[in-house]
Each structure stands twice: as structure tokens, then as C-alpha cells.
Image (tube, rainbow, N blue to C red; front, side, top):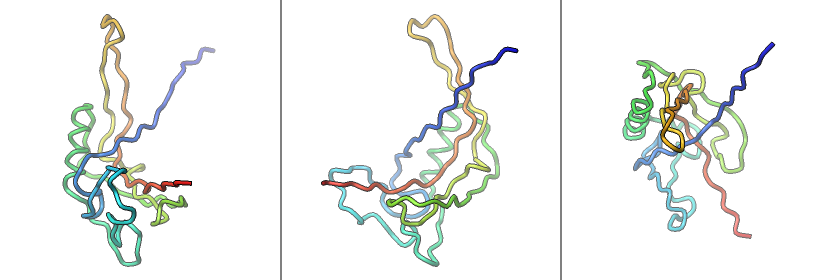
Length: 139
């Protein structure tokens, strides 16, 4: 019996957009200039009754990445809540597309070090999701 080694990686990329994925708060990544707890709202902090609304720019940029990676872009997708506790996740859940992503079955093509062989890596899915905040400890 022979076996074939299969390796899977989960890679996270930040979408460089002016707003966050589900609210109009500024999506600043400048950690040296950022003042704690300034780019937040009731949606970000999971306040009761605050409803997330998809932001246009992050969706468009995600779809462009899906096209660049030759993904199948589906007409329908869904977001789910994945509940777990992180000290820097005030909502207590993450909004994710794990079960029904917008983009699937893509690929990345590249050459090896001496450009003699073309390689291809398959992309199973690209999913949009919220991520945790960032806890910074100075002591």
C-alpha cells in the first residue's frame, strides 16, 4: 500500500480597506499610532441589538483576490457565528464563511528557484471572516 503526503495550510491575510468587514469603523493597522479602544463601535464589541452590515470595499477586494487566484466565485454564500473565547474577542464569537465560502477551487502557479519547472498549488477556499482584536501587554 502506498501513501501520498498531503499538506494543508491555513493562511490568514488582512484586507487593506478603509473600514472593517461588518461596520464602518476605521480599519487602521498602524499599531504605533493607534490609540486603544478608539476604532470600535457597538457592532465591534458585540453589544446587544447591534447588527453587523457588510462593508463594500472589503468584499470587492476579497473578490479580486479570488479572481487573481482563479477561484470559482459562487453567487451565494453564508456567514456563520463560531463561538469561542479569546480575551481580545469582545463579541465572544467570530463571523466566518467556513461552511459556505464565496470562493473555492483556486490555484497559485509559480516557478521553482531556477525557473526550470512550473509548480501549482491548489486553493481549497477563500473565506471572509472577522478576526480578533489585538491585546498588547507592555509589562
